[in-house]
Length: 150
Image (cartoon, rainbow, N blue to C red):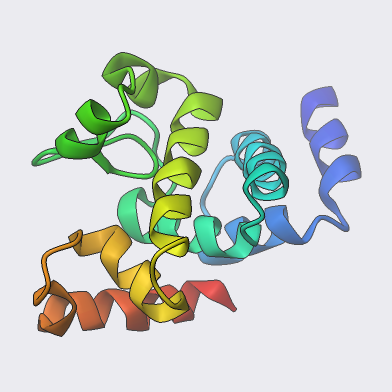
């Protein structure tokens, strides 16, 4: 009960937390608070609006940390290619919330530095292949992104 009251007191006016809960009403509030705090921290460090990564995390994993889908891992669904390229620790991506979110911001930052906003979001999903942003599933990804970005 004390943990819940603490969480409510700290998050009432937290737009990052509110976005996460709005996107996934069933999420544990204490866990959502931690996701929001880490997302805000790395948002500040990378200069990327937290709403962007919060939306990506919802699409990629529904804010679940220990999840693997094909070759993608963690709350931000970092793929094996990027894990190797950035020398990320796959175990930590799957088990350390802060590290997993930081890794997602680092990958997104690379796309941000090379592409305009919408294309950076789509390429976070599909990579650097020239034609991948024309894929209908990638266009649907961008549409879903804006649904959760609100």
